[in-house]
Length: 386
Image (cartoon, rainbow, N blue to C red; front, top):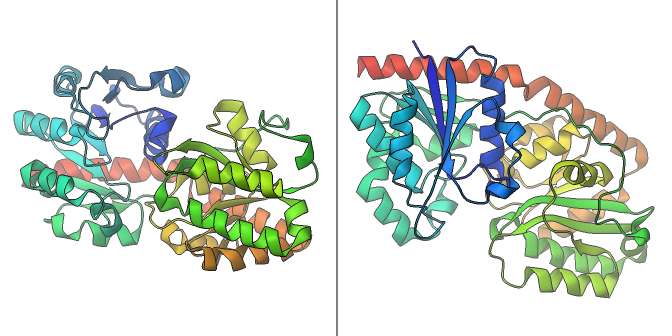
């Protein structure tokens, strides 16, 4: 019987992107499942960005780390897991030290863990920093993955990404869910008077090479040069933090001066995040690689149609009329911007209603809670049989 469950992840800061948000929502969903204790084991980094109220259903263990944040060596995480005495640990994300801590905890206690890779085992990700990841894999991560009691997968595609590590344990597809959208209707702090009456094309999240950001700006510049109505009636707004794209801020600023319709607003939290989403007409994610992006679900919950690539692994959005297809190169993003600009009000309203209906039907808190509880029990049974 599972009385205590733990979650282990590198950070619970909003700067952790979709992984941190998915873990937070898992805690929320599990809080009504009757566990004796839910604990969260993470790093003490960037905690000034964390709203404690959002994690109050769990006991937080914040562990100090040394060395580069990309690995986050935090030996105290093993000790915090031992103190919490969970019956099962749910690991969010891979490649960092929390994986090693949980692996050691399982070896010492004989208890199971499940893994949510969050898209981090797909080929595009593995190919980046391949020497370092190869070393981590051979040292312990491959053994950790093969010994997992179960896998929480976000998409059918992810099943293929983890196939080499499956040894008979359960692997269930459980979608993330989006909380109901609410906003006070006010303008976000970044709003400019010249944006009044314009269609806002919003990117909100981690600004990373894989998101197609630079290609998006190239396509935007081309259409702004060619179409005066688009240039003067639209605005491209980036809300988030730059995670290593050299020249991003300079390019956004240059386009803003050239066309008057591009803005880098920086990270948005709390009410400003919802106000930013509330101003958008379209949500943009021309990504090259994703697990299952939380930002798309949040946009749909707010009734914002998405312009997204198939690599977002949410084809159901295309099927249900809540999203419009794009690529991740400038040449394939350009026609999707043209099509969005030409979309009439009736068709946009239909896409908006489709987006809200899709989230309500397919990405609910109840479905996530039921799926996780079933997977946890299957993982315990598999461990006993093994």
